[in-house]
Image 1 (cartoon, rainbow, N blue to C red):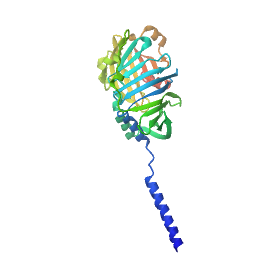
Image 2 (cartoon, rainbow, N blue to C red):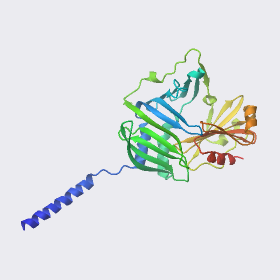
Image 3 (tube, helix red, strand yellow):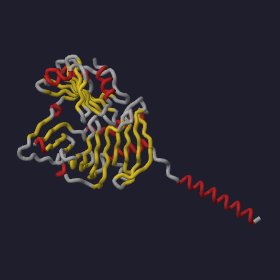
Image 4 (spheres, rainbow, N blue to C red):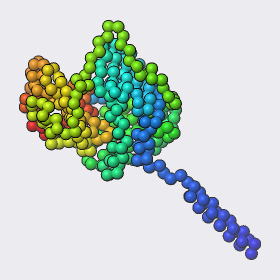
Length: 337
């Protein structure tokens, strides 16, 4: 009898322990949760580190930079390699981007990218809510000596780029990213090899003194007027703005700007899927140099390594800038005729 009681007691104990283990076992972390934490960390976390970046737009480029970021307030990137880029510095202070190119003795000024990202988390949350974005947890790996979650982000609306992010399990900062096109080719990647998190970063890190003999040039986009739609922008120019009837899956129009360009007007239409973006620029043919247009004729010209394509569309020069497959760019422009 005692033996029966002992066996029954053991069985009950095993069942109880198993139940407690199941109850206390951590739930698998959700990919959408990781992605949102990654985006929200941008406004909370400051750090400095060294990253390796690779971009392949027909002419592969590998570079190494020191990155310093003060939350979503300011960003500083210093190029350490290759030799032809060493010494270049880019500072985004939330109002404007200033890029110092020592070889050209120039500082180029254009609108801030940091400011654009401040609404990013809300836009991504909306895509997750409406089911147009899929996030998959791939696993865990170490990057720069730190544990990361690996997630893959894709559109649920047909073909498009695939993006993988390696997200710090403690700070939720993106330490590595890889973007692959629909054909499976890696278009761009960046990975930190060193990173140090900080409570704050002095504002002096984001100052851009102008060295003697250096010329400061402002992008026409600094004085651009901003509109939500093409019809709102149309009265600002004396040519018919052409819009594409084909937009890659997952992308939507995100705004229109009108700026001055060589005495005429330049229209920029921006599209985004809230992860990446591309822009279409339109200006009259007379704003573009004759030799360039004679070489262009009615077809396509690519600016190697920069992801920029040029077309002649009627009386306009149309440029498409972004990490898109050439076949997608052609579909966009063909839909504008």
